[in-house]
Image (cartoon, rainbow, N blue to C red; front, side, top):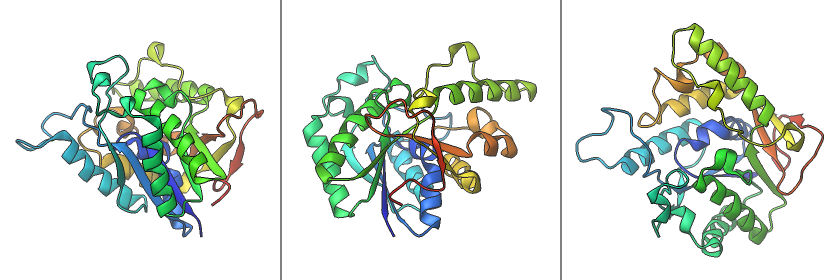
Amino acid sequence: MSTLVCFHAHPDDESLSTGGLMAKASTAGHRVILVTATRGEQGEPQPGVLAPGEALWERRVQELAEAAALLGAEPPRFLDYEDSGMMETPANANPACFWQADLNEAADRLAAILAEVSADVLTIYDPNGLYGHPDHIQVHRVGRLAGERAGLAHVYEATVGRERARDGFRAMATEMKARGLQGPNIDDIPDFGVPEADLAYLVDVSAHTRAKREALARHRSQVSAENGFLALPDEYYDQMFALEHFALPGVFGNGGPQLVELLPGL
């Protein structure tokens, strides 16, 4: 059996982009390790979720542990940087934030974990961090460097095919509007991910979308059943999140992805 390490920026990222892979790998008997760069200090809590005096990061660490357990991962590990917030916000200047981290130092922290767990496969993000969040971009930079230092042959970028993402968001917006729910404004949808031709693999996680959804729901401080992805009917959620998309670092123009049961190396 192999060891899969999924490296993410904040609590809840794991459930959205690699939750299906984690659950599927665990079910197949592989060891699953979740590493998160920050504790999500800059997130916006849902109203009334935090107890008096409770710090957001404390709640998010608890939520992450619950989600990881549902996905079959070991208790989460942290690189111990602080959340950088969205691009061009004051939090970006915090010297303790991940965006300001020294790349060599951060890569050494991650590489030490990779060596400790005898990692076989590492997932990071694409160069733009899916949608341009500074911590996500830093996950790509740090993860790629750490993978090289650890000598990993299997490093994959968790991403989405840009065309698929736009089509999916349009369909979701239409579905939610039809049900009287507030959905995304399709005119404001950014260019997520990478061109379809740059994808290498699509992992079929259709048997694990419910676990993925249940894990996302554990992030109560960040998501609500009344809006966003969790407001989708089960059958529509299953359809939208049945595939997880991966690219190869530095490899472009593959001509389209290969549908696989698990990523090579697992």
